[in-house]
Image 1 (cartoon, helix red, strand yellow):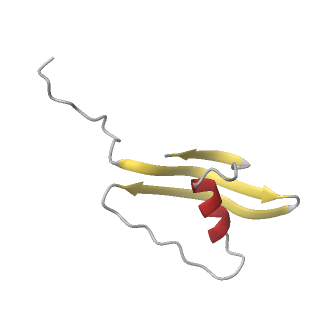
Image 2 (cartoon, rainbow, N blue to C red):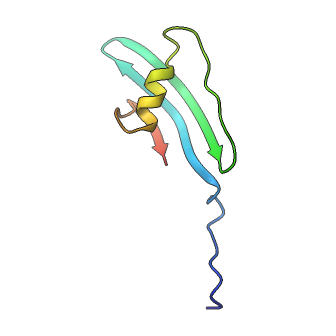
Length: 73
């Protein structure tokens, strides 16, 4: 070992969502959402009322779990 710390190839990916779906009762709020945010990036989520912005924020904060797909921080 040379003392140099090497990061894995995807170390710059700090938030990854893959094919995320969120459903409440019979209402599908998010479907097929895929997002990758990397270090030094600032993703912006915009949309009208009921578009799923708050649901997405809850998924990222782990206040909710996706119905399908994966959320990796």
